[in-house]
Length: 282
Figure 1 (cartoon, rainbow, N blue to C red):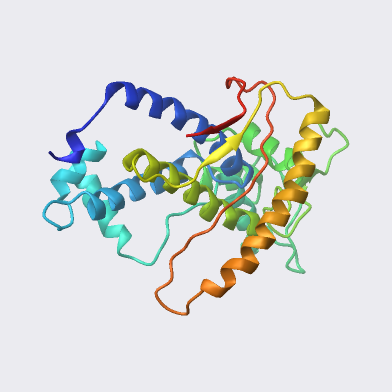
Figure 2 (figure 1 turned 45 degrees about the horizontal axis):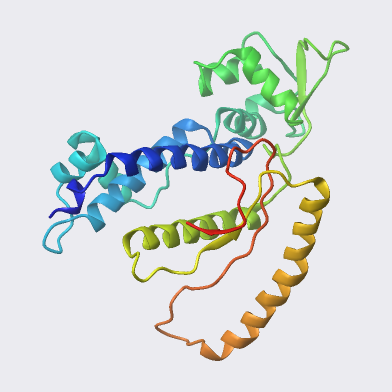
């Protein structure tokens, strides 16, 4: 039977609840890095089309546009557009409006002083102003929201005595960096989270030969318990990882190797409604 038609309503409901939890955690990371819903949705659309095309074809062939549209819920024209874009080298635009405003403010000569530095700008009025930048970059976003974002992230400062309702603002940075650079950690998100989801997916599809996946968790730990958990992971967990690193080094190959490993991480969140448990598998 076609795997596309093997739907279990109860399982779909559980997947939807799990998806909300996953997306909640992901949304926090994306928003803190200046990536909004539009960029996320476009990326998600491209990934859905790519996976449906490459992995759900019939008779070892890529799936047709009609089949991809049926599976993903997108129309055929949208599928064709996404497939066409996927063959180009240009990734989808990931910048949020505030980032684009700051980029233009820094680079556009009309917004620079005689020495090439970004000007102090009035919030309202004709160009050069924040209002003019907003009208060009994100006309559907209110000017108050744009100004608040620039000030609250520390990217800009009020140039007026009244910091609560500034008439003029000035840049404080050389680029839109609302949080400290964490590019290396973001790379881990792309590999580690994907690896965990791949393991979960494997275990769902191959219950007779599951990959090891266990965790210990509680929903009522005291601060002392959280501290003990953190210390145990840092010490015993690190000892185990060092041991595996040394033991598995002899099994490496220069060609034809497989991406494989084991991860240890600590999680802690107040008010999470998960049942109290000890060691469990998913």
